[in-house]
Each structure stands twice: as structure tokens, then as C-alpha cells.
Image (cartoon, rainbow, N blue to C red; front, side, top):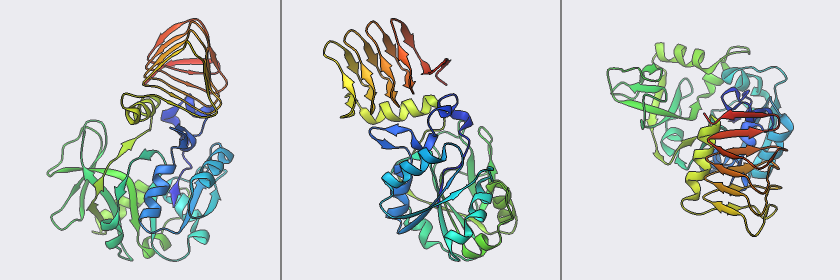
Length: 304
């Protein structure tokens, strides 16, 4: 199951126009990466839950699926565990491999799948790159989760990063509380009874939870080059450096964009100079010099 029903509050105001899972990453939706991880782990059937901008997310998932796919709509947001509970009729009565829709990378989840236990849950973990920035998981020697720590907290053991992927045993799925319910509640109950475990996986991982993280993800994937969608227009006489120009977007002659993401139909007109920005939605940037900003229709905000 792909968890794609969040509000995207940390992505505001960008998520007012584009659902976070549907954000364009070099021509494909952000959720493409998580779907691919689930498929590589052996999932031939995938359920996606939907809440905000549900039609956008459904279209993105159908385009990227590569597997049989079904949708669980949540007119009222149900929380991570509540979303799984509400989708049980679609998921069947077996174990469920879950992935978050706002991460990017290629992970080998075989160790998680191999840990299957009807009464337990297993979190896919990586050695922690930055415990000050993200929450940490600390394990006992036998792989049981000892502590779940907020960003910046120190525990009595090596910190690991939760990648957004986890395996819920069939008994755990069957016993989920009726929604709404957050996943943290279920984790804490399982941890207290020794049934929450961690498996160390390998691979690459990036998150895209905020506009700045989204820009960093896309620009980082470019390296020293730029990328222009076949349905975008970049006129001769413009300057596009280490930037991505998405479908339906345009950069006019005399405009300059550097280390930027231009997406969801945005246009950069002559005389505009943009550096380290995200420009998204039906917005047109005129003769201005702007750095480190998120530009959407009717709104400009620092890129954070």
C-alpha cells in the first residue's frame, strides 16, 4: 500500500496547487519512486489512499503504477494507521508492505520482506545521515525497537533513519484500531510488547517533504546539467542552468533560471532572473531578480 493521503502541510503553499505525491521529478510524479520500490519488493497489487487533490494523485499513480492498482478515497483524513484500516477490504487478509509517497530513492527491501511475522511490524531503516533533522529509531541487539526519538534527541544506541517503508504482519493489520488513528499509536503499542522491529536496508534515499527539499531533490538529480520536458518551451536566448523545466512550462528569451524547478504550467518571461527557486502552477514571472523563493499563483514565500 502506498500512503498518499496526507495534507501536505509542510509543502504549502505549493501543495495548494499540486498534490505532493504528484509533484514532477524530471518528468515523472514523485510517487513513482515509492511505487517502484514496492514493485521490486514483489508487490503485484498496490492500494493507494487518496485525500487532498485525489484526482491528481490517482492520475499520477495510474501513470506510474506498473502493477494492478486500486484506490481508497478518504474524504476525511484518517491518519496513517487509519488509512490502512479503512483499506482492509482492498488489501485482503495477508501482510502489507507500506510505503510513503514523499520519499525518493532505490531501496533493497528484501530484509524487510524476509522478516514477516504475523504479529509484528518491521521498519525499513538506514544508518542515520542527520539525527538533528529527522527522527531516529534505536534498536536492541536482537532487532527490536528500543526507542523512537524526535529530531535532535539522543538515545542509548546507534540512531537509524526510518525510510518510510514498513511491513505490517497480517495480525497487526487485522487488529488496527478503527480510524482515525496515527501510525505512531500503533508503533508504540507494538514496541511496548516487543513486536516492533527494525531491518537495516541498503540503497539511496531522499525526502521531499518541503518546497526546499523538493528543489534540492530535483536539482541534485540533475548534477551539472539541465532538463527540459518535451512539452515545455525554452526559447533561444534564454539561460537555463542546472534547472528543470517541466511539462507545459515556458522560459522566454532574455530570461535566466539557475538551480530552479519550473513546473505545473509556470512561465518565466523576458527579464526575469531566478536563482534557487521553485515556480509552480499557472503563474508568470516578469522582470524581476528573485533568489531562494517559492512562486505560485498569488503567493511568494521564502523557499524553506
